[in-house]
Image 1 (cartoon, rainbow, N blue to C red):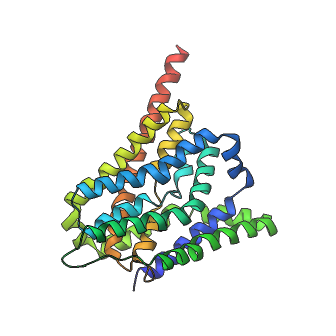
Image 2 (cartoon, one colour):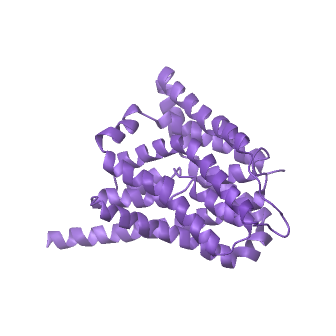
Length: 298
């Protein structure tokens, strides 16, 4: 069975769950605390796609992976970022707000950046000996974003407004679905494209790992430059580095957009490295915090 029949419903359910969790206060932080929101959103929406573009281009990746690496960098708002932020003792309210705002803004920034990326690839004559030219039907991408992202979010908000008790119960159930769903998707694509992944893991793996590590380093540096607190800094690092792999897989493999499952491979690898790196980061913070508390108690 084509994996797209699993991908599209899952991404719709995940975005519906986001709509169930949205509150007006999530967007008020843009006014109440504009600087942390600006730093985080800049890192998510601008800095990471630029870094991905540079790394992928100079890694001399095949065009299908070049576009795939930029694609995963354009999909912020990983469904587990709020949980990671909570465990890392970050600013959960800021994390939730950034996820909410970036998920809405990405509906428009993603088609724009991907159109520029594909146009650049075509202008450079970048082709793959097997797959040939990569083309992007921007109109179809916009429509798919509306159907799979905007409409489910609005339905979730409407459910919360008209059926508050049911929305609370639904959110509790569906919120536990996000991480297993991502693992399920990654497993399906990994099994189906094992040989392609194995054949390109050396260069592509290094490229994706570099992207994750640089995302952590640059977002940390950015937070330091803008003199953000430790709590906010660790939140921004997690939000910038954690990407929505399910969304990237849906766009890459959708028959209405790129219609290419191989393009989803960078997102699958990123999901793996992202979780390993961020779990290590959170573990480091936890150990350091315990040492600080132990020293202060002496």
